[in-house]
Image (cartoon, rainbow, N blue to C red; front, top):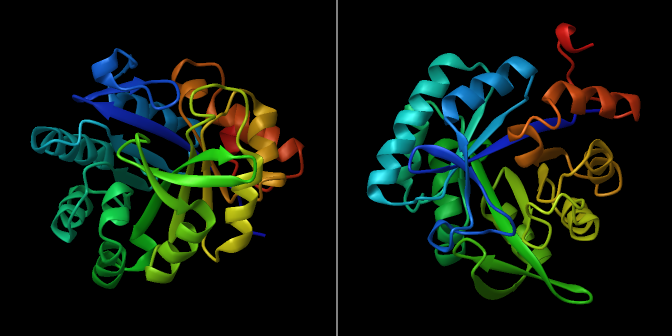
Length: 262
């Protein structure tokens, strides 16, 4: 059995890590400043994180250069794989981030607008580098729809269908973000996570809703996710990565435990 992964996520706005609720936006005053992204990445690296995800929520030309600087500094000091997303619209953008030290690039709205971007990135850099992030929201009792533009724009696409298509085009991993659960700490959306996990042949990372240790175990067991991504519970020191891994191990979930964490 492949070990399940625990992945802290850093939303970077203007060079600082921020945190919102249900995709709150900076222009609406919906973001809370958390700290320096590289300092936080180093903290989680020391705690035994399996990977680190950086999302550039500025997504401007200036913001892209800021993110390049962040990735270069983090890659120089951290030993875990780094994924970067936000504002990546071309193969050249992917190359820029990979050259800076990222191991994977994550695309979302750009993949929806131009699905062939997934294929182009996979052919150029390998599917192991290509992550498709999907923002999903329940729009009817038994229907989850894909949203673009930071969760603001409905696409009309059904979530499982889009996940399957993304994988067929070359995505090597899916990050599934629940808009409904994001930042609420009320638990992950287990139903859509399980449906996507059972429908694709690549790893699925569950995102949105982590509030306690049992939530993380549940989405890995009941939601059948391959990895769990969280932000608030780590940033505000409610739990460490080690706390999560020890709890998952106690629930019979295989994780990679550093000797210092045992």
